[in-house]
Amino acid sequence: MLRGFSLITGTALVVLIALIAGLAVNGILQLQKLDELMNTIVEQHSRKIDLVTQTQLAAHMRTDSLFRMALADDPFERDQHFMTFNRAGFLVGSGRSALLKLGFTPGEQRNFEQQQSLIGSIQAVQEQVIGLLAAERFEQARRLLEKETIPLQATFNQQLSEMRNLYQLQSMEAQRQARMTYQQTFLGTLAFGVLAITLSMLIAWRTLRNISRKSAEIQRQMSELEMSRASLREEATHDALTGLANRRMFHDRLQQAIHHARRYGGKVGILFVDMDRFKEINDRHGHHMGDAVLIEVSKRLVDCVRESDSVARLGGDEFVVMLDGVEGREDCQAAAHKIEQALCNENMPFDDNLVISCSIGQALFPDDGADEESLIRAADAAMYRLKSGPNDERQGSLALAP
Image (cartoon, rainbow, N blue to C red; front, side, top):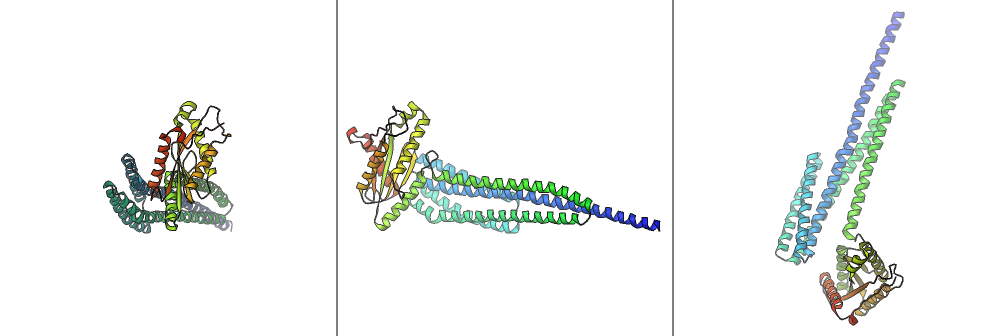
């Protein structure tokens, strides 16, 4: 009877050891699968998301540089935009090549091939635009950009966004599968005794720590990508020093205002503000003081106009103000006078020996120009006539007291 008991006990012990060993092997296999899933989330999916974002930004840069080429009057400036256009095309191609090397599912492969056909259409239209620009047929090039190139680019951006969303969904599914794998491993371990439970808890603790760390890394990467996109959008439309609209955004706003005025019979005023002898401020007081002057002037310009108007910094010491919905030149002169009064404020936060002056050129749509380019040129020319005229005719010799 003792031998039978010992045989049963030994058999049970062997079975128990076998079960524990099987549980351990199963736990190790499941944890390896979990680790592979997390590696897929952190490495492959995150890499694909980064590449899709890079491709989307490069494609946007390519269309933007082509648009700037169509707007540029200076051949050297067009050459610079053309170099940017080519560099962006290289980034689009390299991003898609890297995506192809990472491998696709059958569904992803079909989407990728559809995108290739769309890219071919985009490149064909872009080459037509380049040809028109080379032939100096700028108006036709701009119309082709608006009617075909930009809509095609928007479609391509939408496809890239859908691809990025797909990878994000796949990452979430991999996380869900990872959690399910962990739960199965934990429950299986719990069923086979204290020793197996203890072992599984130790493994689970380590696994959870890795999941937390890698999940935090994914969140950090996504936050960095979002911040990067927001920063790119801000840099593309605003001046870095003053926070005002840049040349590109101002052209867009002015174009919309002109379209509205042309449709409803209104007028749009332009004030071209140029600071006189600004180089002397930088030379005598330093660039930090010059930057402070530009920031203060930009604030006062914004305070002088309505919310419906726009103030932009075109570069250097040049500012431009769009007066939307004015009645005539009297409104432009009144706004210019208000700006002069603001800049002559005796509470300027500068040294006693710092003197600032500016010249303000005016232009009115549709009297002085039929589009945004001609209107800005007219205001610029008016400003230079004023700057080069006699001192008693100058509009804005503005000595800003401290």
